Length: 178
Ligand code: NI
Image (cartoon, protein in one colour):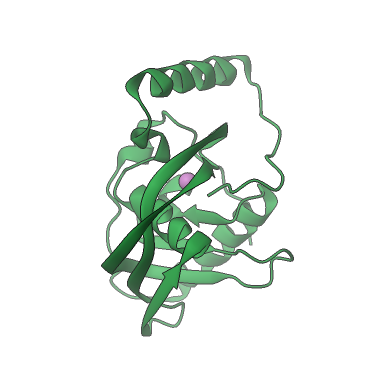
């Protein structure tokens, strides 16, 4: 397994639209393992392959406290949405920024697991938010896109300045970093 580099906003590669996975093979399973190691080390609770510069439709999530419940969604699709909720979100590609985003409360998601088997899941609350956040990444979208233009500009300038100075922000600890 390997820890991969995470792209940081406003890196244009985060805007790429990820391609569907044609076959779930050992290459994809290795990617999933590397993504998990990267996410756990960051630390974060969700990661999309595009964030490690692999434009494939693969996302992983682990909401457990002890990194014991990895969930893998390959070619995920939201087929139903219901209600609304708003929680404070962060993102491994947008260090140190947290902001509330309005999303669907419950969703029905369809995907392939790491064996390539199709499954469907109805989820709500935090898991639902995570899946929506990660699928946004696969469509070239970052959560700061939901903020005002002014806020987004401020974040972009700050992160560009930090990158130039070679500053690596401290990990966010307990926060919801996706
Ligand atoms: Ni994210």
